[in-house]
Structures are given as C-alpha cells and as structure tokens.
Length: 121
Image 1 (cartoon, rainbow, N blue to C red):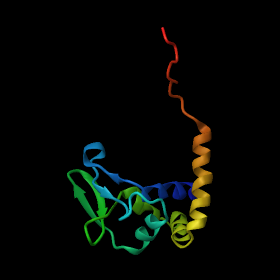
Image 2: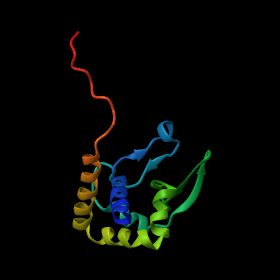
Image 3: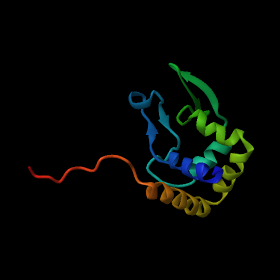
Image 4: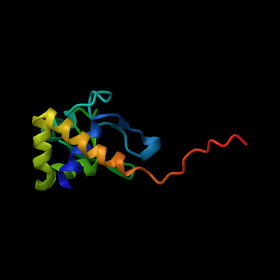
C-alpha cells in the first residue's frame, strides 16, 4: 500500500546513517531524537543535490548537514507517493495515526527468529 510505505518512511525522522554500518552518512533531520513530521517537510521544502559518497549515492541539503537516500527522494519524484508526503508534511496528526496503523501491522506479522532458550541445563 503506497500510503503505508510513505507513512513508515517517516521513521527516518529518527536517527542517522552511519558510514561504518551502511556506507551512508548523516541525519535526515536536525532533530534526530524527535519523532515528528519534519522528515516530510524537509523532503519537500529543501533543495536536495545528489552526491556520490565513495559508491554510495545520497542527497545533501544546501547546508551539507542533512541527507536523504535515493529511496527518500523517490517519494517526492513519484506522484503516487508525493501526495502522501504532502499530506504528512501538513498534518502531523494524520502522520502519527497512519504510522501507528502501518507499524502495528508490521508488529502483528512477528518474526521467524528463534526465541531465546530458557533451558537452564
């Protein structure tokens, strides 16, 4: 579902990319410890320039302090996704509501990871 995909991408409001973990570098937002709709407003309102970071193509804002991945930029280049980016940029309550619903679906799916053994032997 396109809307759920865009809602889940809003988790990029949190955290940052670490070169040693992924090859990508930098935060998506100037407030990477705050869950809000800033990801969407920044994605729409800043000018993003492509940059090749040693084989890892990412986008930088004019201040060179924030980054976006190609998958982030795709959300504003495709009209099917962009309408939801615009919706969430202008309505944080709707973002929170839709994110919670989509994330809840992921949690309900569970994992196929083995559970830790409680055997004391």
